Image (tube, rainbow, N blue to C red; front, side, top):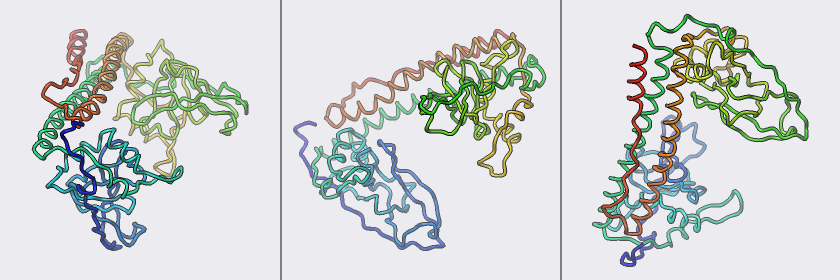
Length: 410
């Protein structure tokens, strides 16, 4: 921080709010919470007073500063957005009104996202393990360097200008990925006349039996499957004493797997190379793919498609909507459109290029994520001037791939 900025106690900048209100059982209330690591103040839920186990709650107002006693040391602090004006919090969330004659609320908001401010909250937190709490008097006694209001406005304007560019770059990434995924899906669902009729899963995949005998003293690295089409991942390693299954199934690259319980929410996928050799419980049916009929990429794209998941829900059984299971017998009878092998090979080629693009996107996303902390660090050291590195350019190959695909099928 520049030496020219005077040090001002937080207690001079923040006035604690005591706007407690009585909770009425028949009225509705919006409960507010604070996300970790500077991710903002959000709506937790909307409930009736009868569902709140307290007679009073603290009411918050837009642009007030709020933090979590428990997790301020983990970046759970920020401004209340205007849309949550009138929401309520418990006493675990101290609320402060910034002195607008000394500090801009947005200046405080951005400053609270810096590592140095979070370190300040850590220093103000005391207690034993699992009982660490922020001490308000200690927090308010800390001093921060504070520029004049005009300088605060300039800093906030520059930060928000750069933050908007970073957000735009993230949106571009999402758009590119969505268009790439749509391109792959169009090669299965498209009205090109090249797709074969419905094909039963039982004719193109084979259920594998569990093939790993569990030893109580053995260690077993598990695979898992994310919901909503996010694929197969490497999970935790567990000892044989941590679960009751006597047998497990070892998955191999290009196997197809899903959990019976969550398949209807898009938890299905092809095993990637990095998960080869991991194990799953009997609650995860594993299928060997007959690659002479269907390429793994086809199943991966098809079953990651959101419009398919309601169809799987229809063939899943269970009385409780959250406990519906997709049994292998039902899955093997399920029918999907199967493109001809020539088109499958073309989809594989396109998907390989798209996967390379996604890897590049992931690297770029990491660069984007690192930009904001760097910008804030420079801003609150008084070093944020006009020449700040712009967010990295986003690759835009989806249109090119789509044009190539269109050209190859005409």
